[in-house]
Amino acid sequence: MIVFRLGREKHGTSLSGIGAAKNGARWNPIGIELIYTANNRSLAMAEVAVHLTLATLPDDYMMITIDIPDDIEIKHLTEADLPTDWQEFPHPSTTQKIGRDFVNENEYCVLMIPSVVTRGDFNLLINPHHKDFSRITITSVVKFPFDKRIFK
Image (cartoon, rainbow, N blue to C red; front, top):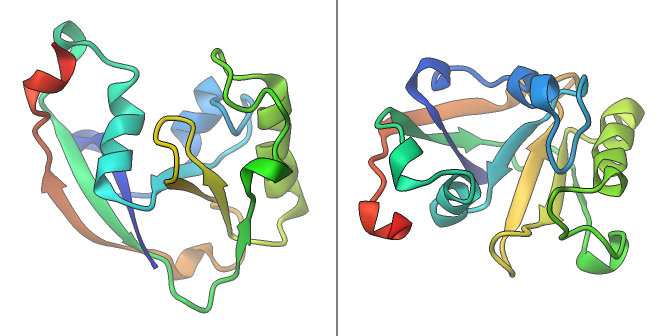
């Protein structure tokens, strides 16, 4: 499976959940490493764009293409599996518990969950501590300029 991640140039050649662990996010509390990816480039862009304005738009974003081998098992969650507050902002602790439990159980390397930003698309969260993580590879890293019309 091919997935995508939009990241700053200085972090574009490695996969790490350290940034997510430093700040916490929708699907992980502070201290829990997860790598956030998307099932398509547009979602990867949208997931970043919701946190930016034209004034804060950096010019060093890179689109990272990642290959998850087809034989790596993926845990799938649907909206019906999620708590009723899963789409709220700021993100609730109930969604962070899902990511924490996923990492701590360490049964699957990848968790596929519905996107809050783009209905019908999916985020794929990668556990960098799972035994299969070393088999996941970056296949390309290319400059990704944002179209400034998005921020008007």
